Image (cartoon, rainbow, N blue to C red):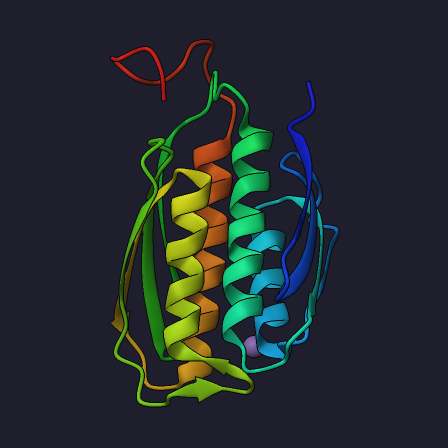
Length: 193
Ligand SMILES: [Mn+2]
Protein backbone atom coordinates (compact mmCIF):
# COMPACT_ATOMS: atom_id res chain seq x y z
CA UNK A 1 0.00 0.00 0.00
CA UNK A 2 1.24 3.46 -0.71
CA UNK A 3 0.18 6.43 1.37
CA UNK A 4 0.44 9.12 -1.26
CA UNK A 5 -1.35 12.32 -2.21
CA UNK A 6 -1.01 15.18 -4.65
CA UNK A 7 -2.96 18.40 -4.07
CA UNK A 8 -3.00 21.59 -6.13
CA UNK A 9 -4.69 24.67 -4.64
CA UNK A 10 -5.10 27.88 -6.59
CA UNK A 11 -6.64 31.15 -5.40
CA UNK A 12 -6.35 34.78 -6.51
CA UNK A 13 -3.52 35.07 -3.97
CA UNK A 14 -1.39 31.96 -4.36
CA UNK A 15 -0.77 28.77 -6.32
CA UNK A 16 0.38 25.85 -4.18
CA UNK A 17 1.25 22.30 -5.23
CA UNK A 18 2.08 19.54 -2.77
CA UNK A 19 3.04 15.96 -3.60
CA UNK A 20 3.76 13.67 -0.66
CA UNK A 21 4.47 10.02 0.04
CA UNK A 22 4.33 9.33 3.76
CA UNK A 23 6.44 6.17 3.44
CA UNK A 24 9.46 7.76 1.82
CA UNK A 25 13.16 8.29 2.40
CA UNK A 26 13.36 12.00 3.14
CA UNK A 27 13.71 13.08 -0.49
CA UNK A 28 12.32 16.57 -0.04
CA UNK A 29 12.18 19.68 -2.20
CA UNK A 30 10.47 22.84 -0.95
CA UNK A 31 10.29 25.90 -3.16
CA UNK A 32 8.30 28.89 -1.88
CA UNK A 33 9.03 32.64 -1.93
CA UNK A 34 9.77 32.55 1.83
CA UNK A 35 13.28 31.09 2.27
CA UNK A 36 13.11 30.42 6.01
CA UNK A 37 9.76 28.63 5.52
CA UNK A 38 11.54 26.43 2.97
CA UNK A 39 14.20 25.62 5.56
CA UNK A 40 11.65 24.75 8.26
CA UNK A 41 9.47 22.66 5.92
CA UNK A 42 12.44 20.76 4.50
CA UNK A 43 13.42 19.89 8.07
CA UNK A 44 9.88 18.87 9.05
CA UNK A 45 9.28 16.71 5.96
CA UNK A 46 12.76 15.15 6.06
CA UNK A 47 12.33 14.04 9.67
CA UNK A 48 8.80 12.83 8.85
CA UNK A 49 10.54 10.34 6.57
CA UNK A 50 8.37 11.53 3.69
CA UNK A 51 9.22 12.03 0.05
CA UNK A 52 7.73 15.41 -0.79
CA UNK A 53 7.64 18.27 -3.24
CA UNK A 54 6.17 21.62 -2.23
CA UNK A 55 5.91 24.49 -4.68
CA UNK A 56 4.26 27.84 -3.99
CA UNK A 57 3.84 31.09 -5.90
CA UNK A 58 2.70 34.37 -4.38
CA UNK A 59 0.44 36.18 -6.87
CA UNK A 60 0.14 39.38 -4.81
CA UNK A 61 3.38 39.70 -2.88
CA UNK A 62 2.12 41.69 0.11
CA UNK A 63 3.95 39.81 2.87
CA UNK A 64 4.58 36.24 4.04
CA UNK A 65 1.01 35.56 5.26
CA UNK A 66 -0.73 34.25 2.14
CA UNK A 67 2.04 31.86 1.19
CA UNK A 68 2.51 30.54 4.73
CA UNK A 69 -1.21 29.95 5.29
CA UNK A 70 -1.91 28.46 1.87
CA UNK A 71 1.08 26.09 2.00
CA UNK A 72 -0.11 24.94 5.45
CA UNK A 73 -3.66 24.35 4.17
CA UNK A 74 -2.49 22.43 1.11
CA UNK A 75 0.07 20.34 3.01
CA UNK A 76 -2.56 19.58 5.68
CA UNK A 77 -5.05 18.45 3.02
CA UNK A 78 -2.42 16.28 1.33
CA UNK A 79 -1.39 14.59 4.59
CA UNK A 80 -5.04 13.95 5.53
CA UNK A 81 -5.71 12.47 2.10
CA UNK A 82 -2.54 10.33 2.18
CA UNK A 83 -3.45 8.93 5.63
CA UNK A 84 -6.70 7.55 4.17
CA UNK A 85 -8.72 5.50 6.69
CA UNK A 86 -5.83 5.62 9.24
CA UNK A 87 -5.98 1.85 9.77
CA UNK A 88 -3.00 0.54 11.73
CA UNK A 89 -1.36 3.85 12.60
CA UNK A 90 0.20 4.49 16.01
CA UNK A 91 -1.91 7.68 16.30
CA UNK A 92 -0.20 9.28 19.37
CA UNK A 93 3.44 10.37 19.55
CA UNK A 94 5.71 12.92 21.14
CA UNK A 95 9.27 14.03 20.56
CA UNK A 96 11.63 16.40 22.36
CA UNK A 97 14.36 17.90 20.18
CA UNK A 98 17.35 20.02 21.19
CA UNK A 99 19.16 22.46 18.93
CA UNK A 100 22.09 23.78 20.91
CA UNK A 101 20.57 25.82 23.79
CA UNK A 102 16.98 25.40 22.51
CA UNK A 103 14.78 22.47 23.57
CA UNK A 104 11.28 21.94 22.17
CA UNK A 105 8.69 19.27 22.90
CA UNK A 106 5.95 18.36 20.41
CA UNK A 107 3.05 15.96 21.02
CA UNK A 108 0.57 14.91 18.32
CA UNK A 109 -2.69 12.97 18.10
CA UNK A 110 -4.08 11.99 14.69
CA UNK A 111 -7.50 12.62 16.19
CA UNK A 112 -9.52 13.87 13.22
CA UNK A 113 -10.03 17.07 15.24
CA UNK A 114 -7.29 19.39 14.12
CA UNK A 115 -6.14 22.01 16.58
CA UNK A 116 -2.82 23.41 17.72
CA UNK A 117 -1.44 24.91 20.92
CA UNK A 118 1.92 26.56 20.40
CA UNK A 119 3.86 28.10 23.30
CA UNK A 120 7.04 29.94 22.35
CA UNK A 121 8.99 32.72 24.02
CA UNK A 122 10.72 34.22 21.00
CA UNK A 123 12.25 37.69 21.24
CA UNK A 124 12.32 38.49 17.51
CA UNK A 125 9.28 39.36 15.38
CA UNK A 126 10.64 37.54 12.35
CA UNK A 127 13.44 35.32 11.09
CA UNK A 128 14.39 36.20 7.53
CA UNK A 129 11.13 36.89 5.67
CA UNK A 130 9.08 34.66 7.97
CA UNK A 131 7.26 36.35 10.85
CA UNK A 132 7.06 34.38 14.09
CA UNK A 133 3.27 34.90 14.26
CA UNK A 134 2.94 33.28 10.84
CA UNK A 135 5.19 30.37 11.86
CA UNK A 136 2.64 29.74 14.63
CA UNK A 137 -0.20 30.26 12.14
CA UNK A 138 1.42 27.63 9.87
CA UNK A 139 1.26 24.99 12.60
CA UNK A 140 -2.34 25.93 13.42
CA UNK A 141 -3.47 25.84 9.78
CA UNK A 142 -1.63 22.56 9.15
CA UNK A 143 -3.22 20.98 12.24
CA UNK A 144 -6.73 22.15 11.32
CA UNK A 145 -6.52 20.93 7.73
CA UNK A 146 -4.83 17.60 8.49
CA UNK A 147 -7.13 16.78 11.41
CA UNK A 148 -4.16 16.37 13.74
CA UNK A 149 -3.94 17.79 17.27
CA UNK A 150 -0.53 19.41 17.83
CA UNK A 151 1.01 20.72 21.05
CA UNK A 152 4.31 22.61 20.88
CA UNK A 153 6.15 23.62 24.05
CA UNK A 154 9.43 25.47 24.18
CA UNK A 155 11.28 24.06 27.19
CA UNK A 156 14.28 26.36 26.78
CA UNK A 157 16.07 28.46 24.18
CA UNK A 158 17.32 31.94 23.32
CA UNK A 159 18.05 31.88 19.59
CA UNK A 160 14.91 32.38 17.47
CA UNK A 161 16.22 30.29 14.55
CA UNK A 162 17.08 27.42 16.91
CA UNK A 163 13.70 27.46 18.65
CA UNK A 164 11.75 27.43 15.37
CA UNK A 165 13.96 24.83 13.72
CA UNK A 166 13.82 22.51 16.75
CA UNK A 167 10.01 22.88 16.72
CA UNK A 168 9.63 21.84 13.09
CA UNK A 169 12.10 18.95 13.48
CA UNK A 170 10.22 17.71 16.54
CA UNK A 171 6.92 18.03 14.66
CA UNK A 172 8.31 15.97 11.77
CA UNK A 173 9.67 13.26 14.07
CA UNK A 174 6.45 13.08 16.11
CA UNK A 175 4.35 12.80 12.93
CA UNK A 176 6.61 10.00 11.63
CA UNK A 177 6.03 8.07 14.84
CA UNK A 178 2.28 8.76 14.86
CA UNK A 179 1.88 7.71 11.20
CA UNK A 180 3.86 4.47 11.72
CA UNK A 181 1.87 1.36 10.78
CA UNK A 182 1.88 -1.00 13.73
CA UNK A 183 -1.59 -2.53 14.01
CA UNK A 184 -4.58 -3.71 12.02
CA UNK A 185 -7.61 -1.65 12.90
CA UNK A 186 -8.34 2.00 13.49
CA UNK A 187 -6.74 2.96 16.85
CA UNK A 188 -9.87 4.38 18.49
CA UNK A 189 -12.47 2.97 20.88
CA UNK A 190 -15.02 4.78 18.71
CA UNK A 191 -13.89 2.76 15.71
CA UNK A 192 -13.10 5.76 13.54
CA UNK A 193 -10.84 8.79 13.51
MN1 LIG B 1 18.92 26.24 10.50
